[in-house]
Length: 182
Image (cartoon, rainbow, N blue to C red; front, side, top):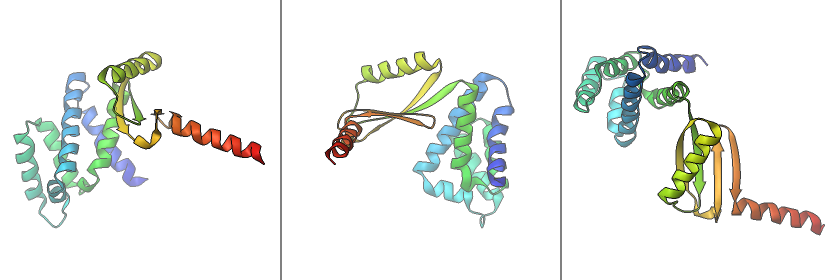
């Protein structure tokens, strides 16, 4: 619990530095870009996390790389704080906490939708519009494909899952038929 609170303090810090919504959006986009950079370049993330390498060397590399990507100096100093406190290896969790804070500030709900095949852009927009209207929130949809679902959609809102796939319906029908057989 103590480490979670410590990581949360870093996530909170970047959003409390400013209450200007445009700056908060900019910082979040840069933090998201850093999360993507860490995911696609493990050597970079490993270097910034390596406690056996001098902190100043790690901070200098972070500054060089992030400046090259056009990062705001405040975000770079925030990353330095994470390096100074030897928690960069937890950056992914800090990012997830940043995302949750950002979504709260901007009234955004995360929705995970799984379908058996690709949806057209028109279908995706229709689904997004439906949820935004129904929930009165901006929606961030994470799309995924699972061909074994056969048809329909699986929708996860927060911690609740709505499974309207053909596969789930077939499994339910099978259970119902087997229970009546006996």
